[in-house]
Length: 258
Length: 307
Image (cartoon, rainbow over all chains, first blue to last red; front, side):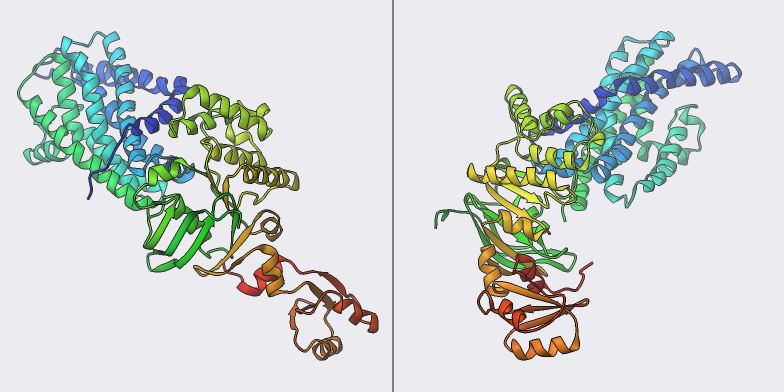
């Protein structure tokens, strides 16, 4: 494994993806605007009416709102760097076109990863506005959430890119979607407190599921409950992300440069 | 020679893919301002060689320099001076024609205002002005090829790598591309071209390298190669046992080839020998034609299909 040599050219790749996103911004802005509304109404108001109060939260909807932010971070970056990157790499040959210019393959992949993180940032910010409109922001620390979105977005992008590097075809992504994303979606303290799970599962969730830490941070910042536990999540993301960032670039390089 | 300056030089250049020897220790030189053609059947190693020249495939062994720079050491500097028109369409389908050129210019650090000016010129030159705001999907094959060529020129390259630039094009589009290649050559751009069309190679290339099974098996000027390997003329006659016998007697030193129901006679005897033979005999379905590069190619690489 080698540390990639990256220059300012990473931004040129990022900018290409950003330009495409902005061309179709109306389509891109809708899901993060509507999806949280569905969840907040169905789960927060509907299900919430029959759920008993969770200690430390005035209502169930207040408990799940931060989880929606974390899920948005996960989905947007993970799917951008699996399906999105795979289409650009394999079907559109965009990477081939770019590496015929002074940009290196490492920079292409790094640009994709940073773009994945940026998508997380954009979508999560939109979700944040929706949640704000529902009056569910309980602390001024919420302003730090976009930073979390970028960091966690980079984590999910980097993990996603590792799957892209080993994917023999686009259908392969069904595996990480069902075996990694779905269990994480349900078991990371998203819709019920993680404390309610068997301790073994709790340990697994903290050790291996990045969403647990994204939820943890979002919830802490939303309600202003800055316990030391948040620091653990920051450290977890800050350690895991560079590892997968470098690993994914190496794996992609091995896949593309024979 | 007018173009003595060596621009690209390969020494024992080798490329292996998982045990498959795609390029087998080849040596070649490309001179400044020439148009050099790489010919060969599918899988001969042409595209692999081109990809090593523009630094996207690492070498397995040997040395390769472009303008005196080693591809292994200075890929960015080399890629800056090269324009590439790949075999496969890799235009960006998410952008319009104009935006494709501008985004590509950005990859080369070309300032925006200059890129805009350059892109306008290229669109005009390739007769794509009316398509400037059209999305790639809606272009015909010929327009896509032209745009790929325009994109390859956005950085005003000294070296242009064209991998089968006219495959699948109608004669009009083919001639436009040929004219472009000629005018770029006149401006001093060094061109490396691969093609399966022998008339195209004969038309455009100053020099030709024929590759097969990863090796360079012959090189030279198109006309010299034709003279050396097939002579001046080829006689073609409908197949018939009697005629065959007669030909074998008459042209004992010639190469006779039967393909389908035609006999082909290749000889290094001078112009006119076939004509005088035909006058004295009464064979049917005979035709004399000039020897061409396709004859050379088939002689050297055989008729067996490769894929």
